[in-house]
Image (cartoon, rainbow, N blue to C red):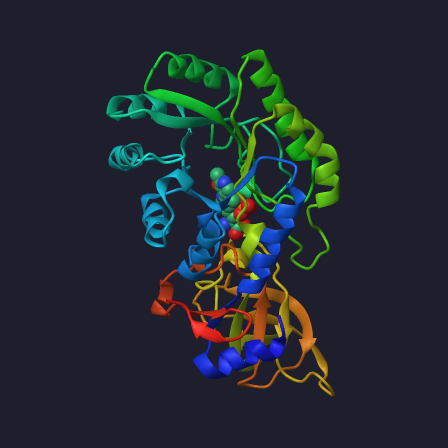
Length: 382
Ligand code: LLP
């Protein structure tokens, strides 16, 4: 996205702001469509990554499905027009009343996370219901431990023995229709191998159970390049994973979140102070960890680009920090950038996923506004 657009957004709406580039999201959707053209493929966008209504509306119009993990997300997608048959319900702790609603509405699939959840669902079944089982294939996704979900020590999904028991139970219940298996092994995955391991183990399991899956849901997790050059290689993915997917002959569902939206957004902030101590320089922004918690929570390193003329500016090494009363409120440590002046703008990159969605009110500093760039004009998101 042209940095002049980001400057214009900052000048027009003030800072801090999230700026979303909708044409980028369209571009990602077209890459996926082309990539999976030989499959019966459905994208079920992971709403948790970004629940902004303008973004959801773009996806709604494109006939995309959605993956929700809470009743709040469910209501959000319904409010922008998603019909229940385009909604997949995930989450490891579904409440009774919520299950009841999903059953009544007839969602595309309730993805069961545990045997206990199956028992709970059985008790409130009022009509035929489609379900899938989230299996945990005990695969190391080689990502940050906080966002790995496919190891047996993680709370998500069930092992294959439990899945076997669940399948037997589901088969004996006429109201339940087992449409598929689901697995999500983690997020920001930049290697194909963990996916391969997961698909292979699901394939063996399905074969051993003589299961005809109408849906194979591989969750999300595709990693993007946050500036260190590490990214999931889609050509390798095609080469190694596609032949296996063909063997399934099922509808392939991916619940991508980050890959669709992360690079579409910038957190634009103003430099408030440049503080010099005897040992350090701190660039203090008017945004902090309450607006973007990924650096504090996962040690994530987002690129920060200057939105000022860097010509004839000396380079400095500084910690880029926010206004929150926590030392973890640091976006980058010893970051080299052209020395800014007070009042100038910078943009923190790749914040479209798990950015605003994880923002909080801590320190009672208001959340940023969200600004939409539709390719022609900027507007405040509704
Ligand atoms: N499906 C399920 C069941 C999930 O739990 C998730 C993410 C996704 C799909 C989407 O994964 P994605 O394609 O976005 O990687 N807050 C962390 C990421 C947490 C991901 C949680 N589950 C972060 O900022 O890195």
